Image 1 (cartoon, helix red, strand yellow):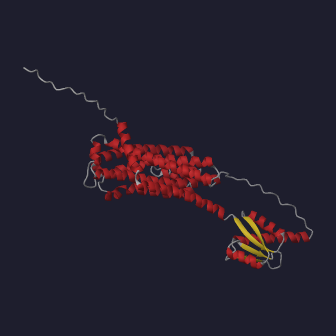
Image 2: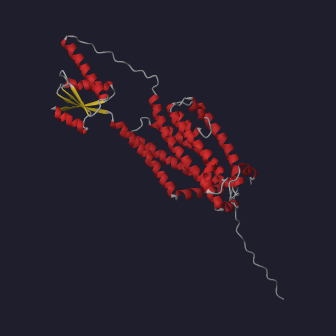
Amino acid sequence: MTAPVHPETTERPDVTPHTPAQLVRLVAGREVSTRVRDKGFLIGSAVLIVLILGMLVFQVAISSGSDTTRVGVVGGSSDVSTALETQGGALDTEVEVVAYDDEGAARTAVEDGDIDAALVDPTGERPELLVENDGGQVESLVQGALQGLSVDQQLAESGVRLESPPLVQVVALDPDADADLEAAVVALVGVVVLYSLLILFGQFVAQGVVEEKSSRVVELLLATMRPWQLLAGKILGLGVLGLAQMLVIAVVGVAGALAFDVVELPGRLIGTVLTVVAWFVLGYAFYASVFAAAASLVSRQEDLGSVITPASLLLVVGFVISIQAAQDPTGTLATVTSFVPGLSPLVMPVRQAAGGAEWWEVVVAVVLMLVTIAVIVRVGGRIYSGALLRTGGKVKLREALQGER
């Protein structure tokens, strides 16, 4: 009689289930790796950086192109050159005087654009000013210089000696006005980038949700994780990628502005840029949750526009108001909208940079934004959970809330 054969006991390794945090990180890593390989994302990032550098170069070209007025002089003494330069200083314009031997050479220089105007026989009875088409500011400059020179000569011939006029002391009532304006311009440029990235990454979140629903991939994902973990991973992954892109653009912009000497206060510039980056984090958390919840209501890319349009319009409204806030940071419209969640990430940075927002206003706007984000994440998570597995058509909002897993 043979002994019974007992099956060999095989030891199976313990499989430790993933924790919620690990599942969120896995989804976030997947989102980052997918978008980093996307050509559209890389091209868009390059375009934004090129635009920032282009604006800096344009600003340098404008700043250096119209500061000097070149005036040719035919005949006359050194007193004429001194009078022209003095008058230019009074008009806050640098004047460069170029001497010519005859009228023909001066006329040719004006026609070729080498000089802005030519003054012929300035000390004669009938001096002439040769210009290309319209004298404009140079006519006022030359006229004022010759009038002052004539008065000085007549007084000297009459034996009258004038004492030097008193030096006017300029007292600036708002010495930081120029710095505030410069910071507001920097903030406005930052808001343009912030607006572009919020639109871009909000659409990334929405498109990803619809792609997963239409391909039924979401069913496989939800077999191993909860809907809120999938939503959190998407928002976190794309948020990290968006923040990294924002920081790269900020570093390039700040370095370019300092290299081209576009700004005078680097400390103020860096503070403004960091403020914009901080508001990007809050704005992204708000809009990414809204876009994801809205996108979960549809199953086709063709229907996506209808559900994300309200959030997109809110972004557009905030961007338009931010432009107005740069001109009037203490106005009623800018002040009120800087507290409205969804609008504050675009309006408040401009008000802060322009010196139109008190510290407590910023605190209130941030608190309101955080509270609203918490509510949006809670309600949006319910919508996302209730609508994620419903395919075939557009899910009504009430059905999504009632069908929460």
